[in-house]
Image 1: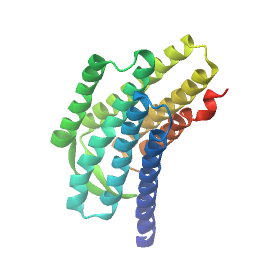
Image 2: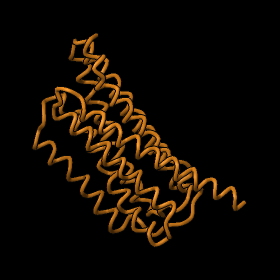
Image 3: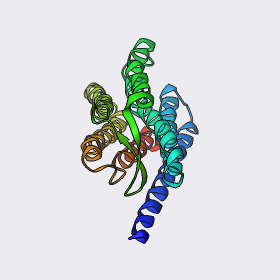
Length: 227
């Protein structure tokens, strides 16, 4: 029994460390592309913020209960910025960088961070993959609803843009972005009720975020421009 629990904790550590390394790599990959524009930097912020969330999870799993309680706040704070930067990334394709849109949409994100640090987290307990936060259900629903809303809104915006463009490489890129956002949204939709009912039984949200990152990074491939 103890061995089984230890293996689950090791799985959580390895999975989160791998996810962090992958997301940081994707940020570096995109920033090395030639002819960079603002979308490259927004995507890098997306992957760095979610990668940092993954990295903090490593120390949550391996640290003491007190350390895990502190780090879970930082973890969810960084993770909250993932959907925000995804939305910014999509909006850039629609009309460039819109300061008013960026400011308006960052307000709910900051509200999520404030909620995380005030009323959302009541403690931590040992779960299947190491320490995991215990949340106020309504706060967990609000947090998940925010993430789902931003991801779905991003998918909707990307689809609207997809219908208006004619360039083949842009359509291919948008398909990848749409697919990534859909995976992220579905993963979050599954994750929220799962946490409420069973706790953190598997890193579903983290898995979907990594898939999202890979698909969007592929959309930056120079091969698409040669089609």
